[in-house]
Image 1 (cartoon, rainbow, N blue to C red):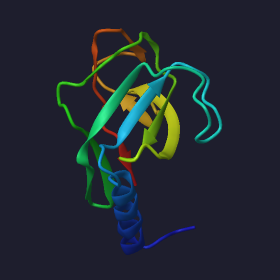
Image 2: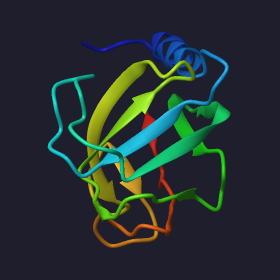
Image 3: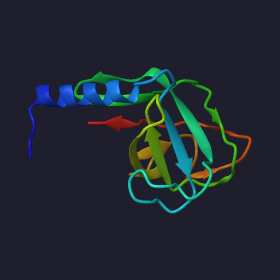
Image 4: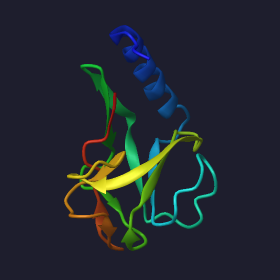
Length: 133
């Protein structure tokens, strides 16, 4: 299916509006567990919860780019290799799950400042460029 640029912008605007729904901020939860089916129990505690800004991103040239609320990163509470991440909206409702890689990889969610996806408790996590097109 090929959609028009105008349709794509409307779709991205809807995604952005849904992500910012609620009084809280949209969040990304990074896990070291096996990725479950969409929205299912993650099977463990997150390594880190990345809090996105509000609005959680900007749309430019047909691409939605997510932005982290704290440019210095979010505290990593549990160490381990991040395998997948979950995006929830400001109400905590599931939006999407996806793979994780470092900034050079092909993951749906990318961590910057590291080779691989190992996160160390007490450190800070920074998302790399995280876009939806």
